[in-house]
Image (cartoon, rainbow, N blue to C red; front, side, top):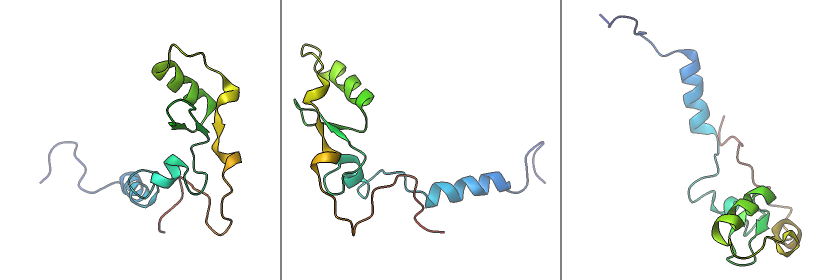
Length: 104
């Protein structure tokens, strides 16, 4: 006999959440390193800091990085390196996707 107000079985919502967590690529770990750094396919890292070569996915993230790491240097948007325009990605390789499914 189970305790008071405790379900005996898993709910459909709980099972669906577990399946989603197990089969969705979140972009982490060793397999997501290319996506995060943008070395091979362009990745999610669009901008590169000209001072420390740190990458960021967007302009706002790069500005936050710059304010935190380089407070004495003024932020100049035109000095940022745009990795998506400088890297020519191979069309045979798929573009990176964080929310892509690994298996069905």
